[in-house]
Amino acid sequence: MKLAFATFLLVCLVLSSSFFEATMAGSSFCDSKCQVRCSKAGVQDRCLKYCGICCKKCQCVPSGTYGNKDECPCYRDLKNSKGKSKCP
Image (tube, rainbow, N blue to C red; front, side, top):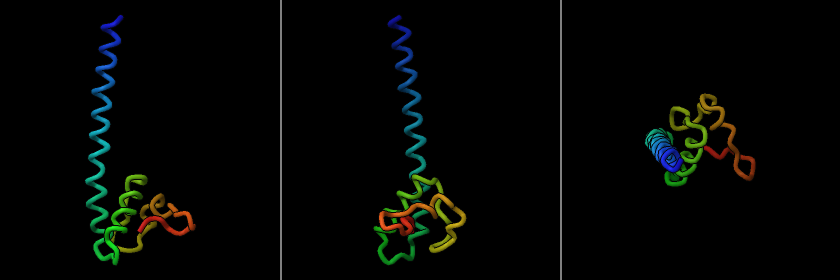
């Protein structure tokens, strides 16, 4: 019984670590897409911050440096506390 439980815990640990790696791999996708999106922004650090938040939540970033938000409805529809678009 103890051996089965230990084996179960080991399998869970391996699966969770592979899930964690897959999640971390998505951040390079967001970083590269947000670099392009924010390349012409006046306040780049703020643009990159909010673009990264939106990308991680929606798993997409519209093409170009401005507009094209219809390509990514989740990204387009995220709002801040004032009801304005959260995503650059």
